[in-house]
Length: 327
Image (cartoon, rainbow, N blue to C red):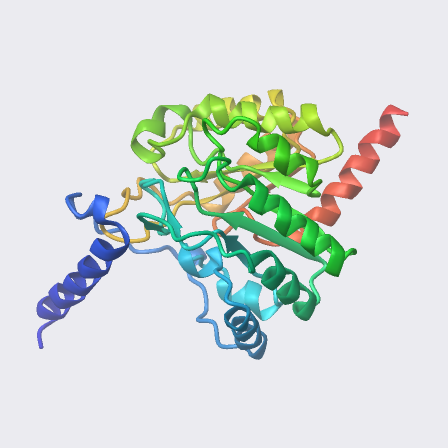
């Protein structure tokens, strides 16, 4: 078999899978991503901790964004029994150009999911858990009550576990945000994802200023909750747009910002515009800190929940130091 024949066969298999998971992208042009630089290469997951985490997730019938979004950090995180659970199923009602989560009509909510999630967290012995979800535009409240039930169940079974949620935008779901905030997560994360000029192309089902207002509203409802948001770079944004986005997040009183490299899930997804160097990521971190964030995590492999446990402790320390200065 020649190399070209092999590549064609691999591309055919990949395309078939894409049609099943992302039917809306079937007509997109094929964009082959450029070779990854050395700083983005990671080891295959093979550790004992990884396998134990995988078994606990499977036993409790849970879905993780680590798997569904093809996160490059899955080996490292699962080896430490850190997994980001994706509630409300594995099928999303949105079709963002960057995302590898399946698009389509979701299943009904699993009424046992909050209990299963709480059991898995207790078995894993987690100090900190990150819970995210697909977009559920089909539900009247966007899944807000389900988020709240998961939080409350975890509080009962693992009262010392701190809870971080990464929510959809609850667009056109009046009262949904209030339901989630009332359940008092420790960290409320909603990713802004990209700069305003790229929203129609990259995040067509969302609205930039709605996401900003969502984060601002969390602080208005409960100032004690840490707020957090994430940005992908490498989609065609300019540095000055990134710095303006930082200002926008700070105007919404966001405490913590994450910045990571966009990695193209398939050849039908939004193409990579550039690989940002580790040195540039460090500059973004320095700029973010100068603008007043309590914490900025910025590196090629940074993702919303990467090192979330350690970062939560850093957040608490940073807030206490800031309050001490103001006293």
